[in-house]
Image (cartoon, rainbow, N blue to C red; front, side, top):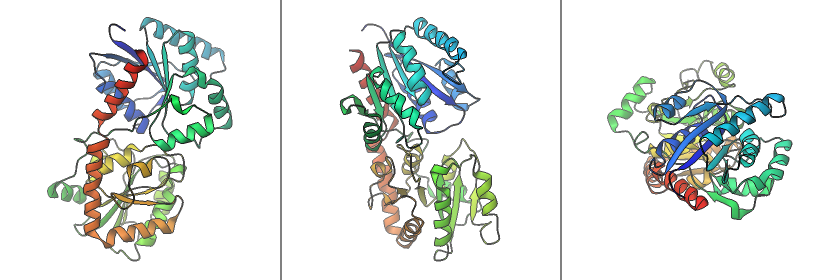
Length: 378
């Protein structure tokens, strides 16, 4: 193939700065400009700093509003999308989420795109049966499926019957400059802004307030641990539909000053610098969490549930503790164990940073995507 490889990334929605959105924004900005020319199509687009960043970097982001794919509007949008593919001479279409995996993939195939790739970002436990049925029937459209963890690969093999030979695992990457261990002054300043003291034991989680993130287990386990850890403080970073419910639930005497809710934020790094331990304890449907990588890059020991790729990033006893999902007592015990052994906790934090530098850099993630694109287009 001569000239640049033109890649069109299709994604269902782009409203927030979630893991998939952040991953896509990083990928299109960091792929080699000498080899690849990237563009993005979004079916449901909202105002977003990541979109602004992609456009500022010269990556076209187009809104093709697709709601239901079985309507006359969808046919018009299919014509619009096919026109974009033809005008841009697209070589590869890479899809994210369900509408892209069906609607965009079909349009790409009918438009003569040489290579179509699906990106599976989680274990798919929230998918409706009709979507699983569709994915099984349409798997022939895809030359390759990228999964973000081995656990995700096993899930899509089991549920969508994708052949293992068509699956490529590429772990997410993290910006090791933006997320780095704070020095003593930076950590003290971050704690001071949140009114935490030097002697406080700060445990934090960064996740959207949605049912699958198990904030109920997180708070229940932490509150139980407070009975034996008087210095324990809780930092919950994120927004979402359940945020106000949890705020009201823990807005009571004795807990009000010990639990901090930040709400939605685009500057996660400032909060990670205030933490002693990072957590992510979903009960189901996890992928390979950017939030876990960001905490590890900050030099935090981790407590995670054995869901999705969590146990691939966090090695039990080495850079954190892996617990069963939906187990409040296991989480409480892990907190107590972390607090009781500061030496081991600090060693785990150092190991977290080492693992990120060795395995999960943005540069490594991009190199592996580039190698796959070149191999498929060869």
